[in-house]
Image 1 (tube, one colour):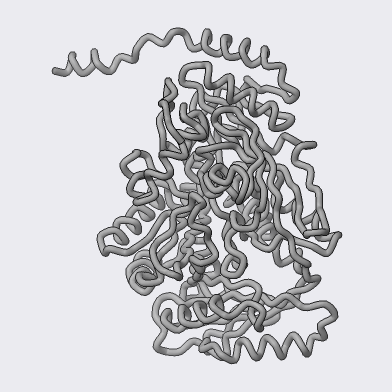
Image 2 (tube, one colour):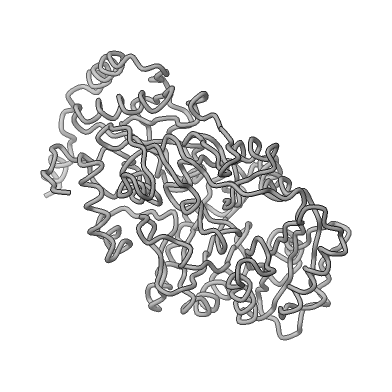
Length: 521
């Protein structure tokens, strides 16, 4: 038996890997791309922010624009087993932008193609798929304009976030970033360059939004803009009772547009202790206004909750008028009255708030350690159970980084896009943004991955309605479960736009196909 096992596990003789590579090299050279190709050590293209996977591609393509990308995809369709992954700024957690022995397209390298053109009427920006949101902000602000919907961290590419959703504290009002683009240029898995909108080539438009890179590579996008404020008021208020926190958060995100309301609503869980990273100190905004634990009710449990709110200053607002609006809005809420923190700052400084944390984390070596993050959407129906089972139990000592939890409105998400959401009109984003020093100073990454698994098992076992955001599964069965009744649509879209399953192999949804299925669309 032993001998038999050994015999079976001998790898098939590989028809010489070097031959494969030199064949590929010749084929790529024949394309005469305007950009460049790297065959050497592929460096950053084999790693990502998650830091838990290393997967080496055969080459990294640095395209000049969409034409180069189309040529590369067409070549991949002629060569057996070759796959193509678009890589933005490498902030995936689980290798989603990698291509094992395939080609990685470095989207950030398309410098002239990624340029940002701002238009005033109607206010929008035409941007490259490889442009960073931080650069979009920089280009728009001189015009007094800015995108309506953001992510918390801005060094992410436009094409990257649009392939997932793009969620921050503005999404309750404007929907995720996928709802705030009106036109895309996409290179499909067939190597066709297509311009699409809600009305023209709409099937492709909605497929790629939240499509996990499965149908095409986004090379350009037209992003909606709005007038940008100069200044904002940034506010944090603290709750000891989860039910009051959720009641107030849901009240604020459901307020009528046009009436008085906050422009940004998020929330987070923190530890009820003097732990400098996970505890009280993580809430204060102004070093001169420290957190006074005397304001916490004696009935409080192991964790507390913070509602984070922002009000844009209107043009020429006097501080007194901002105070009036803030007091009116906060007057309806039931937070611990002594635990209110606020600060005025420039709009751009607020949007860039995570950059400051990044610089500190880089200095401590925490930024480059593994990041076994977990993001999920949890139905409003089950969020109280999630709080009891997860926040107050499994995570009661914190995770060394933010534990975000805040409500979103399903009505702001177009059901034609590929994103999968839980049931109900309101659902919560829960994000476990773990930061811990690399092992042995911090826990081994496997332990944190195991804790994530434990959380998901706990949710499943207790029948909680949730969906992974930035999902990561290893088998098609699990993906089928994730998509649920949308699986057939997702599969049909794949057959239509990437029938050979060349694109985004790191998502591990569809194995590479060798022949076109005849598919009536």
